[in-house]
Image 1 (cartoon, rainbow over the protein chains, first blue to last red):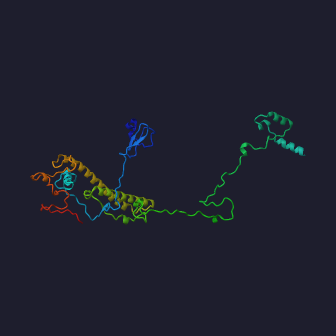
Image 2 (image 1 turned 90 degrees about the vertical axis):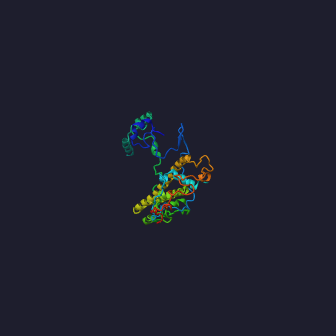
Image 3 (image 1 turned 45 degrees about the vertical axis):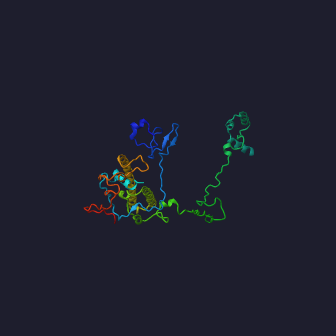
Length: 103
Length: 262
């Protein structure tokens, strides 16, 4: 949804809220677009745009925690021979060939 | 005597007859005035507005059991002896496995001490999470979300009870959790882009045929005789560079050993 053209031009810098200027001024609240408006004033929700939070099963028996022991020093990975290091596609392909390729 | 007294009193009460009868029965008034000087209103019935009952319509005004006002009228018992409302709090059965318990660290108390709050390690690094599967990372993300919920609930509870002591410890704990979450997101984004780039690269790879969905990978070893070694490592072994935690045995000059164990 867009505000009226007049408001886009000169008055953009005004600190307006959602409650100002009865008609013609729309200001969202950072929740995002969830569908589309109909020409009769209604709204059709597009569920492809709607956020869905998927909680995985088996959280109770999961062993990992958000923390790692402070005694374990963080190490850097070794990616000799690969130009981009961990981001290199050659690395991905080599690993795929070694682990998954023959499936 | 009586006649003179009545005359005298009637003289005081001389009222113009037309003012009493605004409807204008002036003929009667004229007759009265001419006959005698005694003036009075036509009827003793009060005006319509004055006929309504003048009372307090609220029969129970001021009576309150919660403020313990006492009875409205005198009774044989004192105000102190009037029974007070009972302190009734219904006992609610709580499910010990309810999901909302995950917002707290323990069921006994809504708070934990700052020392207990400090008992945590460091957050995961991206390197550590690169090795983890999608399922593990997904579950770890939600474990982090739940831990965040606990930390925020603790923060809210401390501010409600006005206890400023544990704020920094809580913030440090939250920082580690958010580090882990950031690392998870980093690892997954990296994996996605690497996959995209690898797919593009696979189109140019002679060993891979992407149209063949059953077995796109046909290693050279099985098809042709051995060719001279190329830049990329032979398909059978793991290349020396990637994911190596110890130096490859074929390179004796390497003196450094990465620290993997405490």
